[in-house]
Amino acid sequence: MSFYVGREASKLWKRFCSEMATELNLLADNWKYILGGLIFQYIHGLAARGVHYLHQPGPVLQDWGFFLLPELGPDKAYISENVFTFIFMSFVLWTFHPFILKIKKIYTVHIWCRVLAFLVTCQFLRIITFYSTQLPGPNYHCREGSKLARLPPPDSIFEVLLINFPRGVLYGCGDLIFSSHMIFSLVFVLTYNKYGTNSFVKLIAWLTVIFQSLLIIASRKHYTVDIVVAWYTVNLVVFFLDRKLPELPDRSTALFLPVVRSKSKEELHKFLNGNSNDSQQPRNGVKGGNGVDDL
Image 1 (cartoon, rainbow, N blue to C red):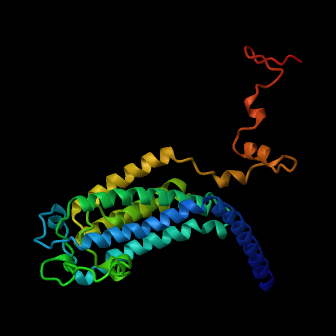
Image 2 (cartoon, helix red, strand yellow; image 1 turned 90 degrees about the vertical axis):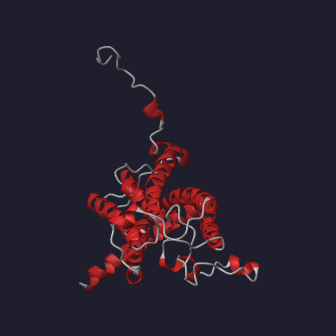
Image 3 (cartoon, rainbow, N blue to C red; image 1 turned 120 degrees about the vertical axis):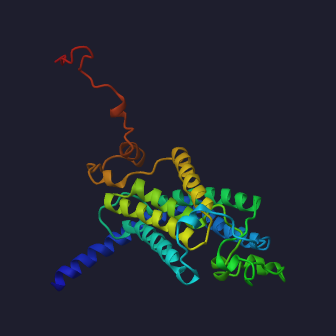
């Protein structure tokens, strides 16, 4: 038994090292996109912090979602956050499965380049939207009478730049249309829906993100319009960007390719992409009309 465990552990370690070498090569080619996407996450947080200084608390607006869904209350606000954390961590772990599993379809670096492109575009539109019109926040800490509803003028520029993480993120006000939680959740689910392989997991993912939408409204963290706008905006952004971005290579098909040792890197690249010269030239000795061999 110990021999079997040791052998499998050795295989797993070799697979991990091989995948790490591959991903590092891809990261060397794509690090600018990854870094740019991560920097924009900070810019997005900075913009959300800035709009909090402009927030003016007022009466909660009339909302059909508030009328239809019972209010959970501030003591149950953690439920929607737990669901979001589950979606977030599940997707992150899935993107790193090529390091562990033998059968894989994606490259981790490639999938995160694509995801960050979706996130940055949606967050850019979100910043424009919530700075265009500031609505009175429906969350409990954003209502009139709450000490957190308004922020005093900052003492220094560093107070703004540090964005009071994580408290400033959890207790922000004014960044309503459209929901940032829904941006992440929908981008993750849409990405898995295309590149994932388990149909049952895809169904559970969609049901979970629908459940999260209802929880956010019931927790009074967002108006219903924030959720509705997120649903069609993120779907449209992903749809159009996905058509413009180059398609990711499917690693699962590479498992069935024959081993080619004598080809150069350029020829092998053409072979893997189906652009070899053999596939572009018509077969010799076959007539186009009756299909009878000349020989």
